[in-house]
Length: 508
Image (cartoon, rainbow, N blue to C red):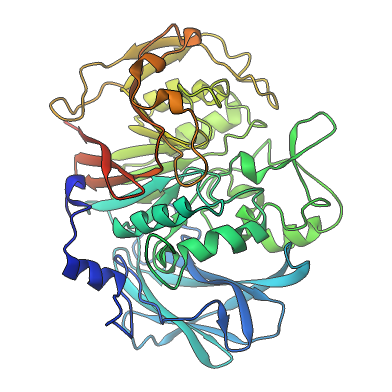
């Protein structure tokens, strides 16, 4: 494994090995994990695939050797077909996984489709496994993946959010993510636009992150080997009720809330006391059958990978972060892990100097709890730019608006203690949490006035505290993290592969 400054310097020979130049006709290697048969599109034989097979993390949280599992999922039109999934520790495969499917409306076509999945069980940690998917006896895709790394193993992941909306920047970010050769993707929410529908995934997400071809103009087959984690966000909740509060209306969008039907994420969190609000009679039961126990359990979950632990939360405006039951689960989750590094991930930034979403500060209510439980870094999206704070401690002194669910003004004032000595180069041991907004994953950028302009990194409501160390809002970008024992490297890479920020964080 290499430090982030070397992530972009891949030799042409190595690049061709990864990208599968035109001389590589057969199998194209990708990351730790995948090769794919070349294809002319999403039609395999006589069957239309609305999502070619892709890897999902499945219901894994703690690291238990021999009990690891991964999900292979895909989607098709509603035409009868016989699928088989084979897997094994070598290309000879030798094991079969049971295939399940449920119907789900696909809005663009106004027709029903099928969501398929197959869970590959009882795997060892840190091992490569091969898989193949057959349709009516014909192999449509072959690949391999690497299971989660055990403690004491170097780990690399990429983080970004607010990405798949149909623009060229989506493809460039997917390509840069693939070039970084991550073990997994940690998305910070709004991973598809504009309304979190299944049709949005078909149109803007799967063709980019599960492309048959690789390049800055087309994306990459990242999803065929790399698990993709994400969190609920505001564009998953696109409608408004009679009081103008966010809600999902299945009468308006029959294929809404596809986060819970397209994704297969851990379900180790509690059933939310304030789940995503829904309304509408048509297609809601269909959604509930397809999502099963994933809705609403996937709203809050956690997982380990190598020496890191990730706490993933729903931060939408119907959430009350002061809720005692939620805080008890968060504290239990964070204190019960022995991971060396702890991350928290949610969509709405706790600390953000951009004007677009500045007032949505309700998740600041969790800062004292995260500090007590030893969290190191918090990742957000929502603001379509990149911001990194200095390490900070924060004590809220008025939580009234943090509790005001459903409102847009959730400002949460408090007292800041900012570590100005940490610079990530000469001084690498922070005092406090580092909050990173990595929401420049593809959609239109916000707040041009803050780009490399420290005089605009202050707000009177925060007593003009200078808590931001870096802000870039003139280009799309993603975060690349590499963890090597007690050292963490972070590099912010723009859509053309240039490093625009870099820090090192160390532990005693």
